[in-house]
Structure formats: C-alpha cells, structure tokens
Amino acid sequence: MKKILLVLTNQETYGNTSEKTGLWLSEATEFVQEVSKAGYEVDYISPKGGMVPIDPRSLEEQFFNDEAKALYEDETFKDRALTNSLKPTEIHPEEYIAIYYAGGHGVMWDFPDKKELQQIAETIYHNQGFVTSVCHGAVGLINLKDQFGEPLIKGKKITGFTNAEELLSGKKKLVPFLTETALKDKGAKFKQRIPYVSYAVTDGQFVTGQNPMSGKAVAVALLEQLN
Image (tube, rainbow, N blue to C red; front, side, top):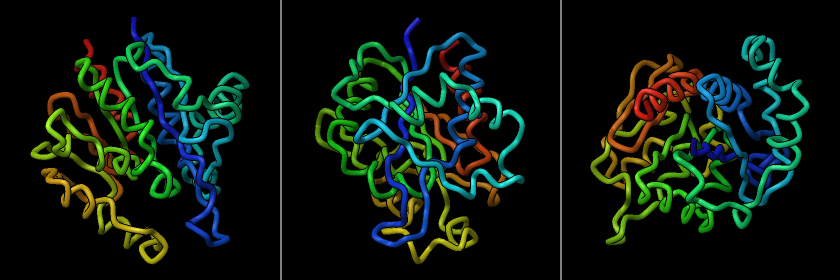
C-alpha cells in the first residue's frame, strides 16, 4: 500500500511581525487519524524540514479536542511531524498515492513558491495520485502546473479558506494575499458553503476542504476515492 505525504509549515509568525502562527493542529491530526485507521502510513514534510511551529490559537480549549490532544501527545507523531519533519529532498514521490497540504496561516509564506514541493505534488498527480488540502493549505496548489505549463487547478472545483472567513478571523490585514482570490486567479472553480462549517469538494484527483473544521471530511472523501 502506497503512503500519504502530509505537508506542514515552518513559518511561525505573520510575515516579519511578532504575531505567532504556524500549523493549525487539528487540520493535521483529524486527517492523520482518519487515514491511519484505514491502514495508510503517513510521512511528514515541510519546506525546510525539521521543526514545525503550532499556531497557539489552535491549542485553545474550543479547538483542542481529545482526539487532537491524543495525537499531539503521541511521541512518534511529535518526533516525525513536529520536530523532525522531512525535507523535500528526502522524498521519493513515487512512494505516495496522495499529498495533503495542512493549513494554518503560516503556509501563506512558505507553501506557494517552494519549487521542490511543487515538483513532488506534480509528480504524484501525474502518477495518478491525489492532491489534497484543507483551509489555507490550498495555497500549496496555486502554482502547480500541468505538462503544458497551465495551472493544474484551472477549471477544477476547489475550495479553501474563504475571503469571508479571513475577514471573520481578524487576520485579513496580516496575510500577504487572500486564499480564495488566489485560487480564482488561477482559474479554479471556487466552491464554498457558510463560514466555519465542515465542507470538502472532490474533482477528479483533487480533494479540498474549506476551513479548519474540514480535515476529517477531506480524509473521508480521499478514502472514498482510494477505495
């Protein structure tokens, strides 16, 4: 059985400010728990490798449920995902059936322009694997190209963190661009439902989730395609 590659951020602040961000923890844990139950092994990668910062807000009580806490306290997960994530150069794309970009605002600075990550995702896609994301993680898709140099998401039904949700998050003035707008600019058929309610969209080899509540929904939808 081929593995699933989970992409995490190394960015711990909003740009050059002192305000902390990073991975939104449940976007990783919900997905991992679901695909692991189905028997899939997960590897963890980040643009630089090594340490993955956690958005402190994602550890607040209303977001940090028992399932997230259980995996967060698991020593193997902490080591492989949060302390010693792999570098892109350590990855062999042919080993993976899917790639999953987890979100958190940090990804807006280190996902879109990382060529090595793009090459991994494009290879998985061209090998008939799945490209998946949740929330801000969708910014990892915006610069993927097909064999003709066209945006890979052009004409595809894609979702991600909406402009309305960014406004409600209170972080609109801190982010370098808006996820929804960036996806639309690349020709994606952007889909959305009401803010902060779980929602996932499948279109061919793409499975994407709208917001932090959608990690499990993406995993379930991906498993339906794999099975």
